[in-house]
Image 1 (tube, helix red, strand yellow):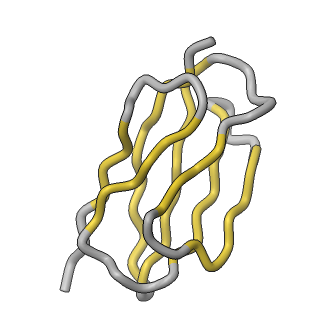
Image 2: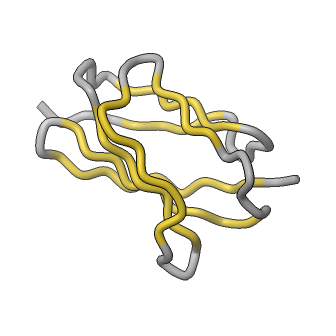
Length: 79
């Protein structure tokens, strides 16, 4: 099956919560708009929450892997 991912709140100040129909552990990577890896999350379990503590305001890309499927979700961090 193909999974859907949404991040909210978006824009966010502190964290992104992922809404998905994937129920397995996921891996996620958060990249800056320049493509630089900022954070890596492994074996995330529901509820999926991505912390943005210590990151600068700006546009980011969240790359999510669930059951050999790759999803890309643009997110905005405000301070």
